[in-house]
Structure formats: C-alpha cells, structure tokens
Image (cartoon, rainbow, N blue to C red):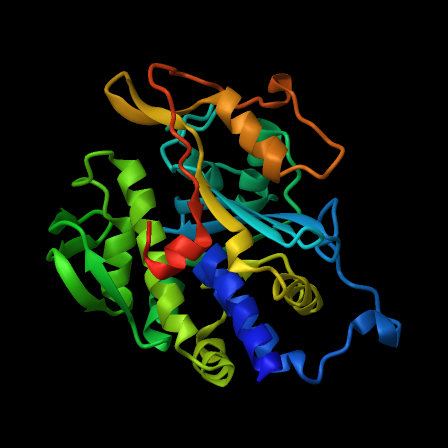
Length: 338
C-alpha cells in the first residue's frame, strides 16, 4: 500500500504540471515495478539539452497547442527541484509581448515562427531561454485533440463553472457554450472551459485562472483512481502527433523516480507578473521584470546562481499597476481552497 501511495503521489505531481505530464507519469507507473536504470545495463541515456533531466534541478517547457497546430494556447515553465523536494510552475500568458520578427508580437505565435530546419518547440524554448535568462532542459506539448482524449480517458471531470460561457469562432472551429454551475465535463467541454477568454473581466488572466480550476478538478479525479486504472486508461490514448516531447522513455522513468517524492505542500504555481496593455488597437500582456526576476531567482535557477535584471531580455512595455503575489499553493488547488 505504501508503494501504491508513492506511485499515486508521483502521478498527481505530474498531473499538476500539465495533462501531458500526467501521460508520462502513467507510462512510468506501468513500467516502474520491473524497471531498472538502463545505465546499469551499459546503455547511456539519451540527452537533448544542456542539463540532464536526471539531475536534481530541471526546468521543463510545457505547452498546449491549438487546433491549427500554429499557436500555443498554454505556455508554462515547470521547475523540479528534487534535492529540496520542490515543484514550481510559472504560467506565461499567451498574449505576452515579444520583440523581434514575430508578426503578431505575441508569445503564443513564437511556436509557428521558426526556421525550416528547427522545430516550433525548439524555437519557443530558445526564445524563453533568451528572454528569461534560464536554461530549459526539456519540453513537452499536447494538442487539443490529445487533451480531449486524455480527459475522456479518465471519465471526465467535475467543475463548478464560475460564469456563463458563450463564444463562437468559425475560423478556429471553436464553439464554447457552458452554463454557470457545477457540471460534469467531458474532453470537448473541458477544452471549452480552459480556452474561454472573452467573458473574463481580466481577459487572458481570467483564462489562466480557469486553467488552475481545471487542474484542481483533474487532481480530484486522478486522486480517486488507482495506479492500475490510470495506467490502463490513459496510456492507450497516448500517441504522436498528439503528444510531443524530447524526453526519451529512459528519461521519463528517471524523472518519474525523482518527481514521485515531491510533496504537494511543497509545490506552487505563479502567473508571470505583469499587466494587460494595448498597442495600435491590439491587446497584449507586459511583463513586470523586477517581480519576475524575484520569482526566477527563487525557483528557476540553481543554488549559487543569481540572475540580474540585465539577464532578462524580455521587453517590459507597461508598469502602471502593482502586481500582487499570485502564487497558489498546490495543496489549496487540490482541495479547492483557493
């Protein structure tokens, strides 16, 4: 029973990070009992970044890709500090202003603006490393189709929808119609919930908050499932091109071994400090660099390393409001006490 509890805790940690990390955890669960590190058999792990994910401090870029496969609707950086048993997640608003030659000047379009021989995820990874001054060790992404499949695989989730949601966009084939109140959402309805933006008073920040509500609901559902149920229901729906990562199978299992011992009480999620602003009639989100610097130095760079404001190349376009500490403790997200 103790081993089973450790497995489920590891799964929950992965789910908190993002749905696609749930997938990796489920795959790890299915194989963990009979698994031994491949290096014991003389094989070296595959590496695809400057820092191995088997070290005790790693940053992951996590994205949700829209139906057009051209925009990242969700952009997050997760830090796993297994030495100190900490997990920290940073949400980057998709409308964040980005300088350079991205036509829309929005972070969600960086993924589609890449050279012929470089992938969208590698391009976005390089942009974040340059703008934030941190190292991204690995990345993972899930498409909207993959998201729907995974939610359906766990039997849907129960969510208390805060407001009536109605929005139609024929160009994106996006149609959102949800009523306020507690209801059971399947994959398609869950997608509507996490993608809705227009009706929130805070715009994209409201959508980011909805993502936290969804994660809490998914936490509750996963918590009620056995490790066997997760392995048998989620693993079969995972396949390319709906789930993308530069992690090898070996690295997933190594990472799972580290992540399963992190407690939810030592996990937190932040939204990148900043504020909405408009430029030439277009809505954007501007970072607050001083406050972002504090978060990065506290959670996203190794001990003994400190970034300066000059290491942050991201452009600040507005600074008219003070940003409150927007961290949510993951225990509160899991319990719904937010």
